Length: 463
Image (cartoon, rainbow, N blue to C red; front, top):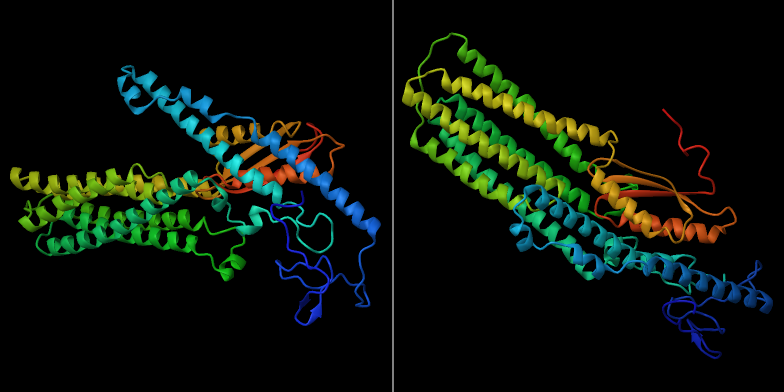
């Protein structure tokens, strides 16, 4: 067996572009040139070399089949499903701690099944993609899946897993687009309301809506930039543009903090004279704030199940908006009804402090992730399970590291192999593990190094 499909070979007497073809020319691949010597004369490969290459190809195929068998026959997913609790079974569990335990167990099972699906789908194609020309005749007898999909590993995944990821991406796009439209409508309504009342709390709500629209546009733009597959962008960003997303959120967080520092300053200035007049809200302002609370609440609950970074950022923003606009409505209403003039500016100041703290925390979180923060424990366990899937083809693992490079994860595996292991085998194992790791949704980049001793240096210079 030399490949997944048989190549169409030329027979003596056939012609291609007016030139007689020799046996061995590849018509399907478009190759119609005989092997040539340095002086340009067509010269067949010596039979002894052809035999040696064919024997090497057979041995290589046998080694790859053994590697596939070791990787793809370890786990029976159906046996794992018996430990899962359905939603109905979870509802029947009265003890909150026990229910939480089984929810976490379900999440772990989902991670395990995702890793199994990735290994079963990607490992096979990755192994077949190695050494496409085993007999060294200039013709690629092997056509692996990775070459066929130009490195886009998601296309190799099972239909169910690929459909799940595509649905999540589709929901994320819908959430972002709905947020854009909602923020435009709410901003127009609040601009009209702000001209009808001098309330500082209403003005703070207007600024918040304007910045919400800016946030959504930043997320929408970075989402589109990351999805573009242009050759010029690949040259400028050789490892992808995923870090544009947290950078966009970071920029927005800074803008939000600076803007509400201005609102905080204005609220202090209004309070300083220690006297004033209670301002009442007109019906149009009450309607604008009420509509904001309702619409943002619906979007918030709609975004919560979509576990992508952009949508979760929008969900956090909608949650903040619900709280913010509820208080923006209550402070002037209660102040006007009770005749307490300082309640409106004091409320605006408290709301500003809340926004500054909330988005300051988001800013700090993105800075630490861009700085290389360690991956979460759940993801580390997922990567350790992936490593266990390769335990049958390695002697062990010297280290496994995972850290953020933005929202995505970069991970490093240091595998242990026998010192007599051939280069072809260590390469196939290491690169297959790398492709499997990079097929996980959280992993942007994976690096695999091979070692023959558990001791020795760690492999990187220390700061």
